[in-house]
Amino acid sequence: MLKVNHLYKSYETGKKSYEVLKDVCFEVKEGEFVAVMGPSGSGKTTLLNCISCFIPYDKGEITLSGVNLSSLNEKEIAKVRNEKLGFVFQDFMLLDGLTILENICVPKAIRREAYGQMEKKAKTLMNMFGIGDIAGKYPSEVSGGQKQRTAVARALMNDPLLILADEPTGNLDSRSGEAVIGAFLKAQKTLNATTFMVTHDSFSASYCDRVIIMRDGRVHTELINNGDRKAFLEELLNVLKVLNGGE
Image 1 (tube, rainbow, N blue to C red):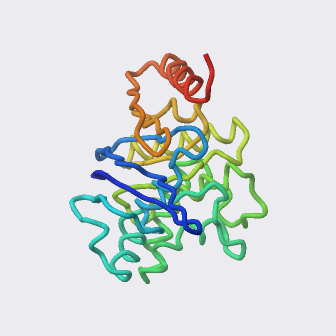
Image 2 (cartoon, rainbow, N blue to C red; image 1 turned 60 degrees about the vertical axis):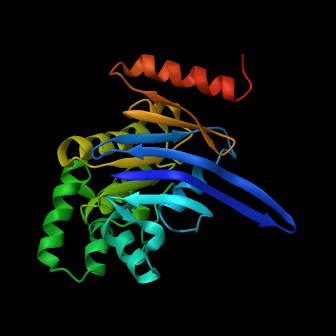
């Protein structure tokens, strides 16, 4: 599904060059829920921005379902973002002037699809995520957890190959965050959705199939969830404690 091979990215500041990503390699398979974790400055957000084509990378290759993203022009990249990728951001990125239902319909509205069809799909997703009762409300009238579940539904409207989630529980309390992770898991189980999530939240990451740990711009290790979530959470916490200078 998603393959990242020997990816490098650096930034120029004055006469100095800072390497942010250094020979990053990994793969995400169809239907997987994968998280990326690591200390601040380890390159997590830069990696996500490279995969989404928001920023260029120096060398390496990113392929999505066999398509080399670096070979696409701006028009082709825009089409991939709308049709093949779904995005969930920490600050929701909902449109205040649209209702919850209308916000979810935005990806299909961009494609000028028939309203009846997009409304039917949006309502199906809202019911799946427990937000069917707020369809006519505006973002300012609902909770943060409801906003983020709206964002997850919106990300799924075009049946993307991959959902990219950037700290999706970062602005939420623990209960709301758990509901959002529940939405990702339901999408995985019901729709075979593939999600790649950057997070600092070990609790959220413990629900994933696999966690890629980054350090200093490289893949430090990968941890696999064998089905015991509590044991996996403990393993995550122990690895992160060592990376952050703990004993």
